[in-house]
Structure formats: structure tokens, C-alpha cells
Image 1 (cartoon, rainbow, N blue to C red):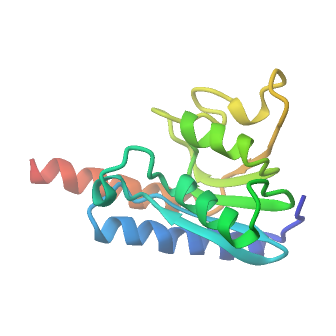
Image 2: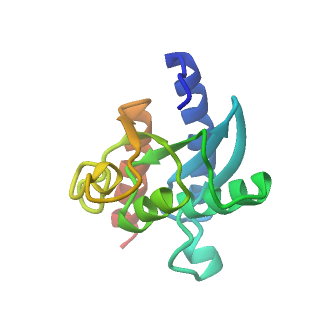
Length: 157
């Protein structure tokens, strides 16, 4: 597992926030993700469900797909996933299946979170792969982009 400094964690979360901005520009729920191995980003993703008309195109899924291609392997051992918002059940399952050992997320997701809020899939002792989870990196920034998005969406209706 990578041992990142606080500054490195902030820098990679900033990259995830850049991905979230891509979703925001397309009027998608603004969640972004990067996967890091050996200090380098090997996968990037942002929500693209509306753009691609695919329910599974969450930021984490897109980043995992790109990292799999980069590595030429479905196993993403020795990597870390940085995501702006706590992963959902689907994404937590995909993280486990990809054998990603470390997840760092910015803000919790009280309605859909599966890494501590509603469920705790990533550390469930009944599963054969458990993930080290850390939260709170740039939490205010990660929460704000979501809050602003939904506030603006409500105003438009």
C-alpha cells in the first residue's frame, strides 16, 4: 500500500476534482476519480451516465477501466483510488473485484455511500478482499461541488 504524504493526497484529490469538473461541464453529477500507482495516475474517470446513456458509467468504473488498460491487467494491486465522493455499492464492489488495496475519498455520501455511510463493503470481514479506506481529504471542496450542483438543479426546476 502506498504511503502518501498529506500534500500528495491533496494533489491527487485535486486531480479527481478536475475530473468532477468534466462531469459538471456536461451537467452530470460532478464526481471525479483517479487511480494512482507508483506516484503516477494510471486511470481517470468522471460520471458520464447521461453522456453515454449507461447506468454504470460512474467515475470509479471509468477510472478502473482505464487503469486496467494502462496496466494490461484486471488486478490493480499496489494502487490507490482517489474519489471526490464516497463510492456507492456498485463502485465499492468493482473496487474489491479489481483488488485495489487503498481508497481515499473526499466527502461522505449519506444517501448511497458503501464505504462507511450506509454500508461498509470495502472493509467487510466476510469478503475475501478488504480495502484500507481514508476520508476527509479536501472534504469541503468535494462536498461543495456536489451541493452547488444539486442547489442549481433545484433552482432550474
